[in-house]
Image (cartoon, rainbow, N blue to C red):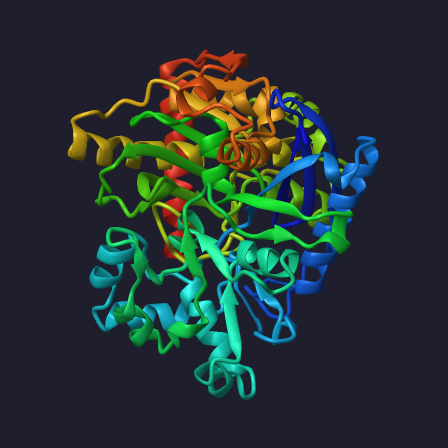
Length: 498
């Protein structure tokens, strides 16, 4: 048993990645699934799609690598966070579609809670804001809107979980209902300081606590995947939300280290050690990972739309056929035009946290073409990252006297774009490091599982294996940087005021 199977269940696809005993990538398999948009600002997944694509890609990657289930030493799971599922305790049948992290249907209820003065208490316990992004109000919506759901939940007939919990339950045949501390920390229901579910918040949201999964370390015993799936029992030994798994995969184990992942959204995490830093700039305080019962905390900034803006160019505007076309288009954009795109398709995340605003484009001329749209789309990700970085620097300085993030480590699909990463370095005025292994999210999940069973090294030795593929350094004139970022700030202000 010399391989680790990493499950990376994401927002638009499920992936399975095999790593060998040296943590080298052996094979991958991926399958996209359908997105459901039943109303404006609503986003759902069919839970059966989440499970079937996960199980299918796991079987496919084992076959593709020429291995058998008996060659797999352990499974690590990483997942889209905050996405909310409720299923029958006995049958495992979900009672409603999975409500995706991007979904904004509970924005009005969150506003009511804020107006009633509950946000300081919720933020103090959870490190989060009262926003529809998180699982708690999604869960309440299901209980309030699915016929009979609340009564069944109160009788103990229903279970709640984020995607990791649902997959663990399915993999183990219903034997384990658990989550890890990083996923629990994203539900709006977990007290990150006391390390337990908050009875006060569950009472506020009217959520029966018997629905909630057991919270475990990120590297822990999560039972075994049943033999009928892969030909033998395979232990599940690592679990982390996707952004925390990427933080681990980037070896950001030292306070002050920062990574940014560019997938459907963009998520930047700054390791703050064993002290939870309370943000004064509407960032999130969260758990980066938890090992041996000790949580390591982080400041997090969440951007709802990153890679999704390229999907919009492809599927919405239909100005490109493949995501890779954006780089040559951006390179050929007219430098005399200053098109600014604010991709607030489902509102704006940190540090603005406005669920009601929607996307806008500024600076259009009669000569604006797909090239200018492509450049504006890629630049929007850099601008949003700078927004996060400015807020993190301020919070980190206030807490620890350290305001400078020397280098940003990046990963995720968009990090493969040299143009986008160079602009990112230019606009934040700091080096951007891209690792040799871009599959850092899957690597983080694999390392957690492999470390737990003794196949992989501990934190310090693992950190020494991190290798740089390319560093991007700032090359933009300071005046141009200030001009472009000023235009972005004006565009955001106009979008928020619309």
